[in-house]
Structures are given as C-alpha cells and as structure tokens.
Amino acid sequence: MVGPMAHSRARPNPADGKPPVRRAAATVGVLFLLVGVLGFVPGITSGMDALRFAGHDSGAYLFGVFQVSVLHNLVHLAFGVAGLLLARTVTGARAFLIGGGAIYLVLWLYGLAVDHDTGANVLPVNDADDWLHLGLGLGMIALGVLTGRPSLTWRCGA
Image 1 (cartoon, rainbow, N blue to C red):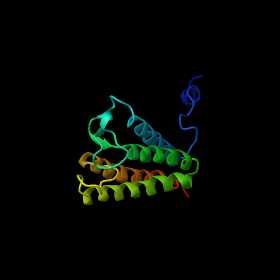
Image 2: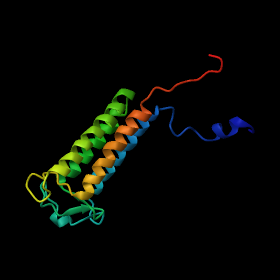
Image 3: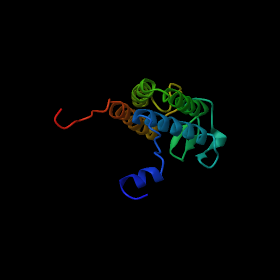
Image 4: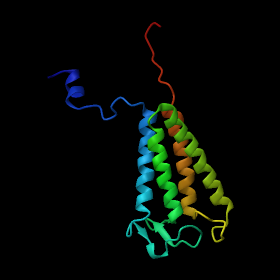
C-alpha cells in the first residue's frame, strides 16, 4: 500500500488509543517498580551488607548515590503498584500523578527539614534523594496537569 495510510497501517499504534495521562501514569508506575526492585539488587545497590529496614544508618546506596533502606524500596514498590492500578482510568491516573507528585514534594520538604544523621530520618534520605524527590514531585504534577487536560478540537469555521 502506498500513500498516507501505508505507514499507519504498517505499524500498530504503540499507545493503543489510551489517553496520554493513563500512559504517563503507567510509565511512572513501571519506573517506580523497577527502582524498588533495583534497590534490592547487589551491584546496582552498593553496600547491601549495610542495608537496614529503616533509619539513617542504612548504608545501602542505589546506583551508589541514593541512600535506600528496605522501607524506602517498599515505598517505591507500593508507588509502582498504585501507579499501575490507578492508570486503569483517566481519573485515577491523573490523581496518581498529581497526588503522588504532591507526596514527593512533601518528601522533599521532609528531606530539607530532617537532620540526615538522626533517627528522625526514617526512610532514609540524603541530599541526592532530596533533589530527586523535588524533580519527581514537579515532574509528576506536570505530567498529571499537562496530559490530563481534555483535548481541544478546533474546527475551521466553527
């Protein structure tokens, strides 16, 4: 087949017609699941012998940079599962992205407020985590707002 329809019929739509907000929430959910699992993988996470359930004394670092604990990894896994479940509807996907983004902004504020070397640093978080949480919060909210808007259709002469 030749012409403008040849390409669209030769390759199926990778989005399968899902609204962008659902694809975005599912993608973020998968990324959280991946990070949660990688937090338990030796080599990807350094200092596995110093991995603790929770607290500032966990000496494990995802990619050698982000301080993690079992609790921190479980939070990532829970966010991933929530993202995939909520991505099943437009309303749920938007709520996951915006609500989850707001939670990550609160985690960013928590990281700024808590002394990283005390028992109050339960998750634990370090400076790299703080910057990541800020980026995740802003990014998730932006995805929820920008992909969750109803599409506008413009018609000539309307």
